Image 1 (tube, rainbow, N blue to C red):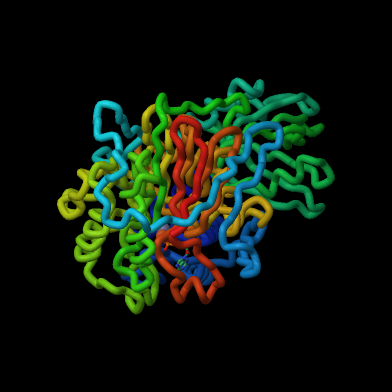
Image 2 (tube, rainbow, N blue to C red):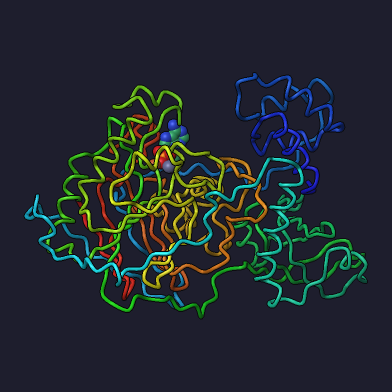
Length: 527
Ligand code: D5M
Ligand code: FE
Ligand code: ZN
């Protein structure tokens, strides 16, 4: 389906106040009269619905026509969590040609220093510390949800990502490829607007650029066919191949992702200093692991933790309200502001001479659409402890020369659902992170779990290569290196919820990953 028609449907629905499921958009865009289908779908959806579902779309289309539905490329895989697997995901070496997998030392938090006030002698010299944030949307959001805004975001995404690929292939715009003679060699850099299998089991990948779209065929019996598993809609790739005899289709020989260059070498700090990278505290939930949290905070006061001068928190400070159905049944604190008050109290347990930085997650009281701005003034006035730095989701945070990309991680659910288990699973949450690095975008596929706010720039593109990529959200601990970038998903401070029990998610609770900023070595501390 051409991008233009799906964007138009999304925009029209947004103007009626609806977010839409991808399938709903596909159905409506494929209807014989999309304009009427949009009006009917809006009528079919209840006024208080936030998301227009495929069912609403079907009801609308049934009323007009029965438009054919495009083949879905591959049905979303539901990842099942194997309860027999160890709960702590281990790092694996996924780029065998380089990159040492870090070998974290897992230790048990000692309770020796409880209450000791910075016995540790943490460096209190602020001159030695440095923490700077770039790529933060806070205060700069301009998106109003119009068609033009969406087009601009996608165009900027294409500009940024195609720029990373242009030097690698001798590409032509799709309209020029259209005019080329059959049998010629050709290359295209485009955004994936459709993936479907043909009657013969080959893969038809439609690429779109600013001049149009072009169908590209990946043959099922080629080695390259396995790459189709990794493709997501809306990501930007480059292909090279040969045009068919009639010039109407490109037979693909090679496919490139924007990727992290293999010669990428991370930057490190000039002195031995460490940072604790955590996420998903979920204060306000009955399952908030207060004892583990307090043990962690106490440990930070001990000599053993003296070199940890930074605490970075990648979203979900509190449990929030109304995030998931029936969530209220498991709330310990029902008022959102009271939750932040309590979170602030827990944060005060952390040594006051640590530098703290926080970004929001999907449970926090900021807009859900990504990029999410940092906490509002009202929430900042509650969370005053430590004079914490607040920035948006995602943010690139440079700590003593080390670039840490912090992103809460809602897209991980999407990548895990779309890709085969070997490439992305809840048990190994660093693997879907590798995919995001490869695609150089924190939330490649529009629709599904992710809400995206259209902005002048696509802030979700990884324009700079991080030295460390830090996410949370899936409540599993996992780490590994991808082309020398340390990918870390940091577990949580919330015991298993009844929803997680029902779907067999066994969260990794009370782990504090600590990165040595001078070496990027990782140590995992268990509480
Ligand atoms: O979500 C933690 C993880 O659990 C994340 O992978 C989503 C999933 N999750 C948790 N609760 C639900 C419900 N009710 N529906 C769907 N998926 C869910 P977090 O948002 O960080 O709590
Ligand atoms: Fe969470
Ligand atoms: Zn979350």
